[in-house]
Amino acid sequence: MRVAVITLVAGRHRHLRLQQDGLAAGTRQPDHYVVVTMDDPGARGVLAGRRPTAGTVSVPTGADGRLPLAAARNAGARRALDAGADLLVFLDVDCVPGPDLLARYARTAADGALLCGTVAYLPPPPPDGYRLSTLPALAPPHPGRPVPGDTEVIRDGDHRLFWSLSFALTAATWRAVGGFCEDYTGYGGEDTDFARTAAAGGVELWWVGGAPAYHQYHPVSRPPVEHIDDILRNGRIYKDRWGSWPMEGWLHEFARRGLVTHDPRTDTWRRTGDVPQGVPGGR
Image (tube, rainbow, N blue to C red; front, side, top):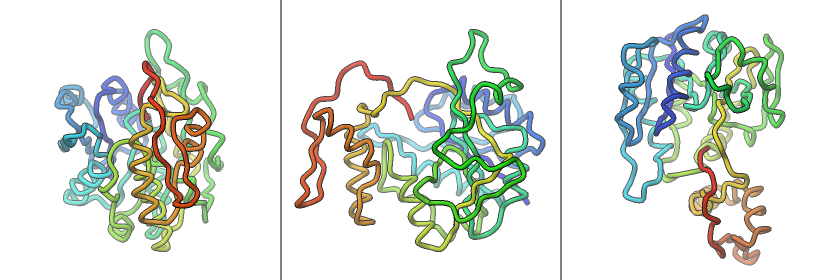
């Protein structure tokens, strides 16, 4: 089985470098490491001369400046499949793989299943940065997702809990799902849509133990008010496709702050207030 790791980058070069280090330290090396750059030509210099060797794919942002996350994942998958990959492993640029992540995904892989490992959110790094050997002790896996034992696989998972931070699927399963819907741009919705499409096609969600990833710290705002327009736009696309709104927790929190309002007659959310200035960004 030929394994490809696919990640997207638009900045966060320090995070990208540590991810590459984590892959190099793994018990199984990727056969292909595909880094999709979104208006980030500097990423090539970060990756050059280091292992595992990375191939880059460039996907430009649109005129609106929104990151084309869905299109970028699809472009990365195309490159990996063209190179002969049998298993696609998607890692967020902030995620450092545990040493057995690729090996566990490869051993567990089966057609008709989305595989998700655990993700732990790390605290801010010390002055000299994170060290691979200390990552497991810095934070537990996220409590909002199942946490299987190291040799355990929890099948028949809830697709609403799918996340794109760390997941894997066979080439056949990717083709069956059809990739990500490229109508989505910017923050939110595209991964919820992908899981919904997978579920509609009979693809199961499996939680895989022993395949941890460690999410490097960066500032965020909760709720993500800097992404309110993306959330409203992408939420509308999802509503038109599936009949319900995603990210409702964020929408209700925006409403509590007077930033959006909901019309129950038409089941429509719309912007009503200005976003506060100076909020942190990031996914």
